[in-house]
Amino acid sequence: MQSETLRINGVPTVAYFAHELNLSANYFGDLIKKETGKSALEFIQLHLIDLAKERIFDTSKSVSEISYELGFKYPQHFTRFFKQKVGISPNAYRGLN
Image 1: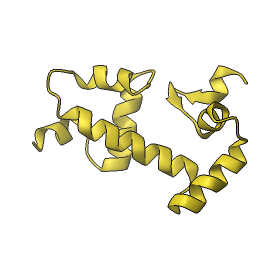
Image 2: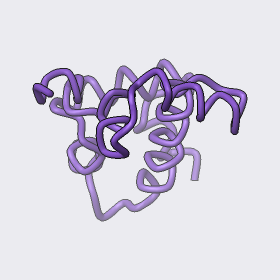
Image 3: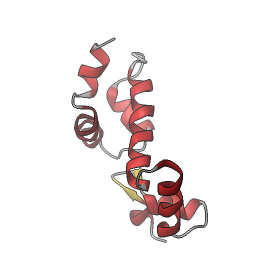
Image 4: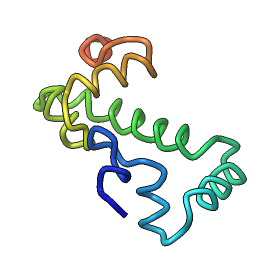
C-alpha cells in the first residue's frame, strides 16, 4: 500500500490502522462502529484530539512541536484541525489553564 494513502498531511488514516492490523479498511471500520458507535475516522480524530489536549498543557513544547509529534506534516494543518474539532485554537486552549 502506498504511504500517501496511509497518511494525510502526516496523520494516520483509517486505511493506516487497518493495514497495521492486517484488516480491510471496511472490516476495521465495522469493528470500530460496533464497539464504539462511532465511525473509524471519528474515533481516530477524537483520540488524536484527546492526545493533543493533554500535550498542549506541556508549556515546555511549542504548538508546532506538538503538531509534529502527533504526525502532522505542517503545524497549520494541526491548528486548523484542532480549531475545527474543539472550537478554539491550540494557543487559546493552552491559555485556558
